[in-house]
Figure 1 (tube, rainbow, N blue to C red):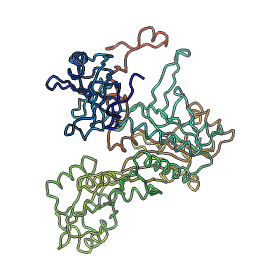
Figure 2: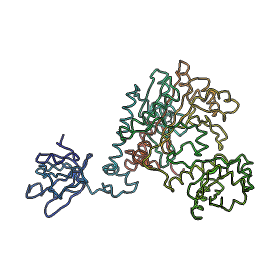
Figure 3: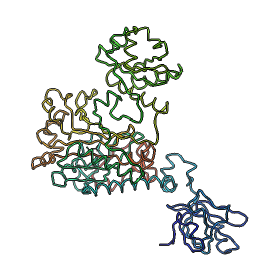
Figure 4: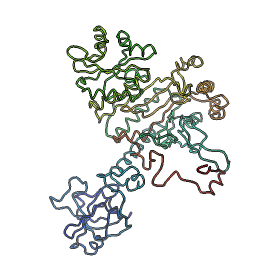
Length: 588
Ligand code: ASP
């Protein structure tokens, strides 16, 4: 190595030794003819000193040093004088007086500061990602990611899982998103897909006898991007044979607990809560509840029926529901604040939001006149309303009511500071409906993917009432965010074909798209189950971040571009020719 120590390792006890350090010039300060440089590498910062009374030659050389120059420097380690020690820096007890300086490379003036105190725009950060990544905070995030992946592997290897890679050039994955495709040169006019997940391959690995598989796999989906999405993300993909829901969930929670112990130095309490989908929808209005706070939703449709409020009756007649949240101690919300909540509800599709304040004299609001005293009493009782509380009600379709109130619940949780930011609250949501109705296309879609086994007792409804069929599905949720989805798979070829038919894939299409999997099933498939855990999101949550781009070394922008290398970019004419592709000319 070109160094004897890294820039984060020297301490007081090393004084009087010699050291060669290598790294980047972080800052240069000239104090009365003595030049001080903070030298930086992945491990930290060390102050190196060019003192003409110590060494004239190196002091002269150091006059030319600028930010981000790369050097090696050799000298003697000295303990700093008392009063000059920097307690905020692990190497702050010492400094190195340089006798030999080697400038490996000069750097141009960096277009962004390699400094955590100032952050450049997203576009510039991604264009000069190598400079952005030099910042200590970014280094910390990627090191955390490494530690998480190491701990995941460590745990799974210990549980006898095998890490097996599956191909990147494949046929098609049925995860519901658009595939990225790669043209084949040798078979012009044909294309490979990039995997949306290793789903079919991991199932085939189970059929091939490789019980207990995992992979840190890249998953590519051509979707429009939101904050928490990237066209390529990494997932911990896992599958087990002869396993059912509980077997997978127990492995998953132990695995997460191992990561927490190793990386976060925190003990998680096991088991994680298991909540049925229907219960989660009822209490929280969604299937990713943030369990760090209460404010549960209550269905008050029966009470609303007894009111004289026309709005409620209209909704109930159309099979809608009325749900209520008791915002504890929020009775003092101003009209302005309440109007903001109403606007928020409307933005998310509700026609309105009713509110009632609980006072010593009972409920108060402009709508209470429609509620006879006995109905008010029932509502107060059901909602456990106490003086100072605020009741918020939404009356709409099942979907809108739950969607809006679940968002209001989270908004209240944040704004009323009910959330302990240091808490990591995991749960599993289980027993999902297998299909969801696609109103736009008037057809059934698979809730997760089409390779999920229906619950045995619901198989009889497959033909008559698909909406009644529940699947052997489960999700893991952390603090209101979905971390993974998985299922027990359809290991029976006839059931598999039936599921495809329900979501509109004919036998012929199924044969064309997934014939190889169905064929494999016919040669002896074990019961198998697994999941795919989003590593980017997991690491981001552990780092306390919302944006997964912060924990990906080279992410894409929201418009799916990479400002650093400039992709996507055009192909040369000869490449197009080889691939037998023609690009229509712009403007016709
Ligand atoms: N392939 C699924 C996904 O990527 C996960 C699974 O069912 O194992 O969401």
